[in-house]
Length: 139
Image (cartoon, rainbow, N blue to C red; front, side, top):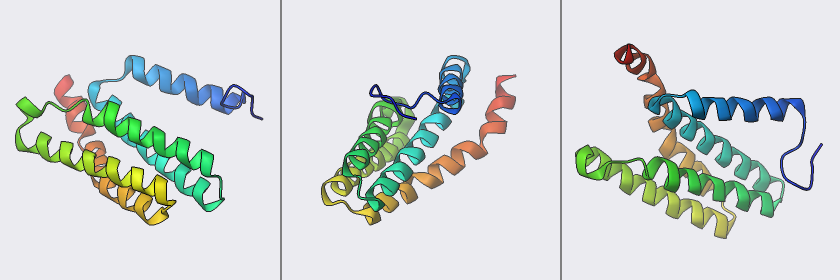
């Protein structure tokens, strides 16, 4: 069930939204970055699905969301001065992913979307894998 104002008003979507808002308010910096990675993967999957179904407007919106997550979330959170070469390399990777997402949108190219997913997935996996160590260090 969808409304003219965006998301459908089903209990599942309401629960998801409350979960996201709660996670942002109560999450540690590590959890917030994990949420950004998850949101990016979700947006790319939505873009791929929309492209496969020929829903170009939905594809464009999903790619726009993925770009915003990269630019305003992951990249904006980097400390290039204090983070050394790793931060510089991540910034460059995020710039490349943003470029490829833009090209995927312009060309309606699912292979480029897959490339972006495959570039970010190892970062997401590594980030999730250090979660227990981060949690332990916070105690």
